[in-house]
Length: 125
Image (cartoon, rainbow, N blue to C red; front, side):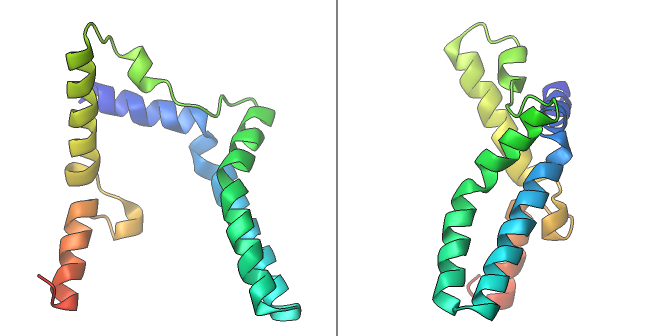
């Protein structure tokens, strides 16, 4: 589990806790909404599509301008003597991320728990 904590710390350190991404995303949505409201809906949709493609690159650029690396290195920092060990470590992290880690965007549920709760509501369970 230490590698997961290390991965989370590395992500926070590399991407300035996600702040540039939130700012870029919010700006894209705001600009697209204003264009759709004051000009034309199709232009707003086009702005959102194009803007959506540049959110991540812009947020990485902002990270780098602020002195953050804008890239993750956690897997490279954990000793990986063999390819099988690396596969195992990545699989373990994916399991943790999807089954155990609570996501605030999912009402503090794991992605699997959230998806299962939505299936129950929709009647597709």
